[in-house]
Amino acid sequence: MSHTMRPAVPVTEPQRIAPDTFLIPNLVAAQPGTFVFMNSMVILAEQPVIVDTGAPLFREEWLEKVTSLVDPADVRWVFISHDDGDHIGNLAPFLELAPNARVITNFFSNERVYADRPGEMPLDRQVWLEPGASLDVGDRKLHLFRPPIFDGPTTRGLFDDRTGAMWSVDSFAALTTGAVYDVADLPSDLYSDSFALFNSLVSPWHQWLDPATYHRHVAAVEAIAPTTIASAHGPVLTGTAIADAFERVRAMAGQPIVPPPGQETLDALIARTLTSAA
Ligand SMILES: [Fe+2]
Ligand SMILES: [Fe+2]
Image (tube, rainbow, N blue to C red; front, side):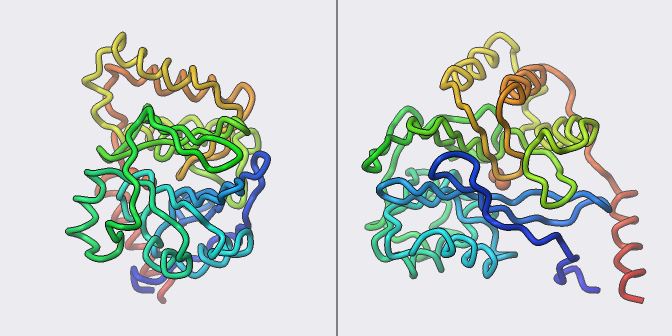
């Protein structure tokens, strides 16, 4: 098996996680029996909104899932949380299908995308909004904020003030066991361990944070008071799992990073690849 072939992953379907709000899940195989989420979201507001566009790795599946929920011609907004490939990966083909959609982004994202993907984000289809700004989508406002954990400087989360649903982008990432979307349905050890590792990988600067300063930022995000949190790489959080997740990231301030997998893991991956090719 070449590294460009995709190991089998469970079939996933759009999940309704709040009124008018659908998670678009995709999975990437991790350690045997575990998978990394690569989610995005759709808000069927009066003016429909796509929230991130997933990775090119599963372009066909992503387009199929999104277009099963909404006619691209009806989509008015594509919110790009930041310019990482797993969030902006299907923007160009979607914009071709969605002539009435404008891209919510910002100055620095535009700069970064221009060099890497020339022509994929036409200037005259962009709207630039910063954290603290809001977007009126007809029957609700969507509010931008800077998430507690992020791996790109352009990152903005989104909060829907009608449903209480929050898109926390790369914050609150954790592995899943398959087509399992709710944190309550995941083994708590898997959630704890992978949450600690992934959030440390995403924001290794947590080791240098002054806890008091960082806690003020986390408290400001928590005060938005989401009732459902969806993210690109983690399970859906509701109820007590929300305060728990904020507490987990708060506790990372000033703590050493979680050691990432090293050469032994790479050796094991190569051995597994060779075995499955035999
Ligand atoms: Fe990212
Ligand atoms: Fe990401």
